[in-house]
Image (cartoon, rainbow, N blue to C red; front, side, top):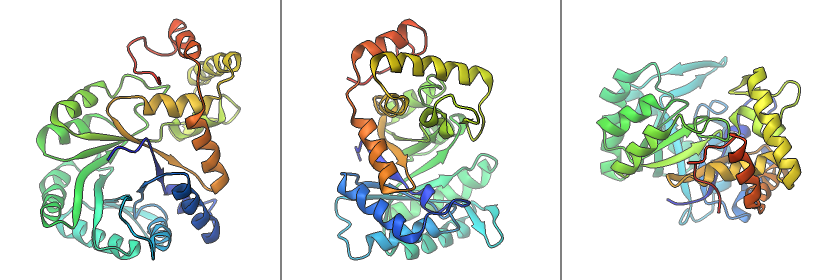
Length: 300
């Protein structure tokens, strides 16, 4: 898989601002029209609602040329309670339910979903179960998706997983946390998908009152750094979101960058930003000001 941008379906299933079914379908259709071929989902997103909506979109379509990924280990039960279960039987059951919602008998990628506090069951039960499903052809590739690098690094070293989904840890604001993970993935031939490259919102909204960083109100030092990047962007005519998306996609280990959206219009804006020409002088000034590392991979 090498797709510069994929579509993350979380916004199509998660409350409180639930997207209605028609808008969700239009968003998925527009993603396909705009050339997106990788769609990521999870049973956790709306207790299966995002998977159901992706399944409705896929119904009657030829899946050839599309890459689909979902996750196991983290789910939501009635009442909104989050449940983590990385046991062998639970993983198989969850995947069966996901395949039913998606309307398919095979999935390209399955990730262990946030096993941060469940290393032993994830490595001893969930991973062997997914490896067996990969060997049988039900699953094309296996990986783990997390908001941290240390455990992903362990999975790379201790298994033969195929792909890691790293969220929030390689962005315009967090440029160095993933270096060891990237190096290990390059050595072992493991692909990397990047998620949440807007850091929970602030790299889309900018340094405005109430801006969120890592899903919490942004601290003063982050607001100040973002404001400085925005000021450079203003001088060069570069929107912040364009810089953030293109910076993440430029990393040589990034097989894909997930972009989420609640509407076709929002998706269009994000992808237009991702394709917007950015002058080399913009990146040069960020490097000069110490806002981007001189050793970072930059968009051509």
